[in-house]
Amino acid sequence: MADALATPGTHGDHPGATKRDFLKLSAAAFAAVGTGAIVWPFISQLAPARDVLALASTDVDIGPITVGQAVTVMWRGKPVFVRHRTEEEVAAARAVPMSDLKDPATDESRVQRGPWLIVVGVCTHLGCIPLGQKPTDPKGDYGGWFCPCHGSHYDTSARIRKGPAPLNLPVPAYAFTSDSAIRIG
Image (cartoon, rainbow, N blue to C red):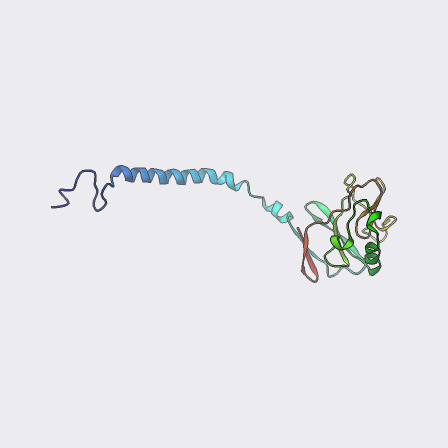
């Protein structure tokens, strides 16, 4: 009999709960789900595509690269020079006085492990690709790389020594994942 005498506007055990409250709650939930369904495609298109993610980093097996050898790998559409330098090349790079350099940088600041030099192989003058990766290529006056387009000479630490290039060849972000592998990017 108490249920029959319930005050108008109440519903069961919850005083103040009405059909209107339920409808408002249902409409808000429906609107939230609908808004999420509409907005999600726009948000998901902002994420990088699979092909872009694939270019974000490159793994390189450096185990087969012998002392004195250099290889070129592609990373983000650019050539990256990986050179396993000889002891003489490392010594020559470390012996250069900073006052002789256009863009001063020590060899130690450009490498993580002494004999390994990893640089982006794009000339900083006009974006040419310097020669010096193949044994038959001219290596310039300093034994590193030579850009024949405008005559830039780089040393064995890929620092600009002569010519119009304003900066050293850039060092990409890289890490040794093991003794015989690196990850660029």
